[in-house]
Length: 467
Ligand code: B12
Ligand code: SF4
Image (tube, rainbow, N blue to C red; front, side, top):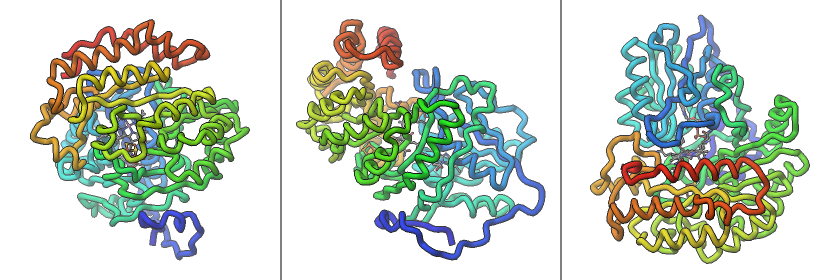
């Protein structure tokens, strides 16, 4: 029996449990070959261009598959090409978010036309397994770790099932091994990966925002690795890079959800010499001591989902972790430690009015947010919010589900007015004057470069960009 945890058994999950493990499945004949692909989206915007982050989710899939299969890894976003002739492979395994689902399906159809077995996983197939099932032999719900043994065995025995879905429980993260980054690094296009090393310490976020896929996939579960395993992984990457000063990007949904774990991990990182950034819940930053510990452990930037400066909108999206009245204090706590903020702001909820743009602009300028990101409210398929908004949604092409396209008309702003203001707020925040106001005194680093790139990008925006 594989060790599984139920969502409510979080603390138990970290304790050693003595169970009799089954003999792992062993390959007796020739090893089958997997082609593992990260498809590039067809979105016209910046999302998949420039330096991209190494896809940790797919590397975990590929690393796991290596125990039973020969694996080749391709990432279309860096310039790797999927061959027309797939005769070399037995299985084509693809990951997909909504914005690259169309491309993932095209590759899947190509593979199946050549008689290959296709496995589809990732957020979009998880949210829409029936749709994905039309292009795949097997769809994986959630993560590969929780169903891998069965999948590997079924592929060899020719008994692949249409859907692999753990029955309400997920595998412990304490068993998670370090993914094999060499699978991606050996690509001739690997120079197009960002210098940041993706790493995972926890998974899940039970906050329950209605626009987010995470609670729909992982429910109320929040799992943690052993902090010493995370530190070991950081040291491995330091050794590999031949220097201490590496940049880690945590891929966690919300690294601070269990404060005691975050504190344990960050304390263990003090003195290690890494720099890091992570998604984090604002309520945790209301205490100045957390920002102090984050700084001591090497934090250079926190990714904060402010989402909106309107309490009505925060209520509308069910983001219980955000208290608008505490925003200024949270920013101050972070900035007092010299940590930068990548702040996410969403426009287009039914609670928004034209004034929301001005209020957001005022907040950003007053608090000198270094790296503001503006997106358009996007109901992702599979969320209850999508079902609610469905009759009003104007975009039915998955390529446009990149959070930069106009999805529906908000209740209190008409389309023209919305797009005009959406462009205006971005242009003003990223005008030379706006950049100088927010960034003066900030050391010369890549965040300056992002601001300069955003200046030129925002000059090119027109209402049509978002349609
Ligand atoms: C970290 C993160 C990012 C990082 C990604 C870095 C990277 N290296 O991948 C950054 C900041 C760059 C990013 C960008 C964006 N993101 Co993001 N991101 C996340 C986040 C918080 C975690 C993803 C992650 O890597 N988790 C860690 C991995 C190890 O866990 P996992 O994803 O569960 O992976 C397992 C399964 O997915 C499964 N699996 C995955 N693929 C496959 C394939 C096969 C064959 C199999 C068998 C299994 C399998 O096994 C994996 C291993 O355990 C998710 C939330 C979430 N929980 O999904 C949002 C999320 C994926 N992002 C989202 C969005 C919208 C975006 C952006 C469009 C935002 C924007 N406007 O810029 C861009 C799109 C970028 C792109 N080209 O895809 C949405 C996607 C919604 C959707 N339906 O598509 C999510 C779900 C958040 C949300 N709002 O709900 N993101
Ligand atoms: S806090 Fe972030 S990760 Fe958690 S449910 Fe809300 S949007 Fe998703």
